[in-house]
Length: 66
Image (cartoon, rainbow, N blue to C red; front, side, top):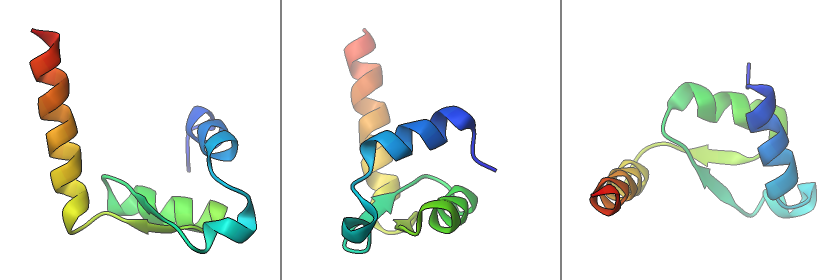
């Protein structure tokens, strides 16, 4: 299950269905990846460079909070 707010966000911000086949969405969790893939027919990745990008984003956010 995906929260209604996440579903609305993805519906609003993802490209039309034809263009979705050409893109990969980076997510933090494999279960979220599989759910989004089922609902929106979009390829999701949660390994490789994705955890590093998320870690960098969190670090940058904490740095800017001070």
